[in-house]
Amino acid sequence: MKTCIVGFTQDAGGREALALARTIAGGGNVALVVCVVTPESWGPTSLGVDVQYSRFLEEQAKGLLDEARALMGDTPNVRYEHVAASSASVGLTQAAERERADLIVLGYAGGSSVGRLFLGSATEELLHSASRPVATAPPGFAGAAALTRVTVGFSGGESAHGTVLHALGLAGALGLPLRLATFTVRERLGYAARVGPDAEQSMVERQTAQSQAALDAVRSQISVTGYPVETAIGVGTDWDQAIAAVNWQEGDLLVLGSSRLGVLQRVFLGSTATKIVRASPVPVLVIPRQG
Image (cartoon, rainbow, N blue to C red):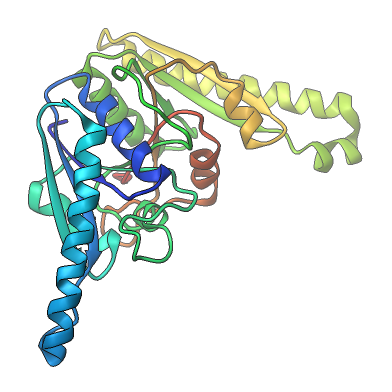
């Protein structure tokens, strides 16, 4: 990983994005480009007003970038840019293409927006449209000295193997251990009311055994490379419980695969991945699925 675009806004989401960027950069020589995105000016048809509006936006962006500099402190290899675009997601995507960035880093997906003059969540939009991997920090994330482990969410399907390979490559490049994790949500009301708690428990145990067999098969394939791999299964009555059931440590990064959107390799989250992103207690990296 060489270059990361970091979306900054003057709220908790912006601070979380910077904290995640510092964590990612802490493990190696990663260039960070902190971007503040503001709306494009209106154009030549209202020149007098447009000049004033452009000046206002530039002043706002300068203030935000000064705040970002103060928050980043002595973090090395950081540049700060003001980007004007039709939307925050468009501006960050254009910056990522221009810099040939490996990753776009954002704050919590639950409501922050890059550039306070934009409505809606740029994080949500980018998680559904970006052509590059997107990393998002959980709410309240204050950062870690560096990444310490890569955990990849494994769904068991054929397309999930591409996500595992991507995570393996990332872990190898960063010199971090790799863990394969599967999450199982128990439909308490759906099963228990119809078949009873004993039958429900039997179903959960059978599903857990199947998940473990799938994880062991992937681990054995990776083991021929000599790379150490752990496995974990989280079971709960909802996504929060299932994900919390897997032990997490400071510096963990959860990697998820997305769906493909048309013929383009783009991030496109399905309902399950979206629930995992929202429930994860650690930063999540979502990659465009290769197949």
